[in-house]
Image (tube, rainbow, N blue to C red):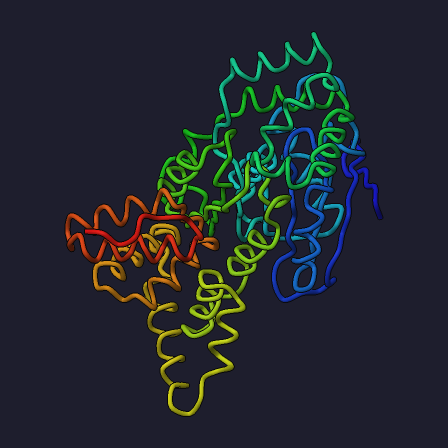
Length: 392
């Protein structure tokens, strides 16, 4: 059933995964100027354990692109009609950019239809009214195809274009071929959309929320996304080496975070094992688990339950912040083996070399220059960065 006409508007829909999984179905909502294909890699990973529904938002992809300006209310009406046509009750919504704004608006309007909400590269207000109006005037004057190569540079981290030049050109083509009427209509929705007054405090959305952001996102910067997550009391995850579309650049990292978010709470051990794998990496945890013998098997269970299933699993601080605290304590106490392990794990938590520098400078002030000096040396070795030796 690739096309549906739930409410006088034809929508292009893909469904994958189990028809009757234990968890709620997952609905993926795409950014402006794209279509459901931006979710391909992520959907493939989630479909093993979830029913996954993707559709092209109105004005994009193969869905209808009516003339005129669109509103968030139009998009939420489309989504409601789609869920009803598919006979779906409550679902998990995963939205990126414009799709994330639609997900927020839908959760506010129909909270009984949303079990969980995952927001990628989005905010209650994206950009400014003047900025989106200016974008619309540019598109009308020059045409979307002429602007696409420059606009798509806001989608990805700079390194992506050198590492994946063919993919980058393909996404520029995808944007260029977006119906211009649909793109303009979506710009109008973004111009007028401002949910910041309605999503202003902890629990404002009334359901579990996860906020993710690419570390190199220039459209919805990490600082703004982190502040939004803190304001609503939601965990925040920074996806390293990614821009505005982290599900394209880092689908494995996004899938790992979403699986942990979607899984039932489980026992402290199950929670801890999931967090331990996300932070330290699945390969490391599998090696540690396989290597455990009679002597230390109970110890492995202990640290999984009481460290990873305890403080690491609490929601008040995000994973990035907890990792900074852990790195500081390990540096100050000169726990060199564990520090080396956690510096390696920074690739999983979005902690950058700049973050490490600031942590070690604080350690130098409050715990002493020698331990900070050694921490810098360990980090340089792990990250492959040249240094000047360990001179105090």
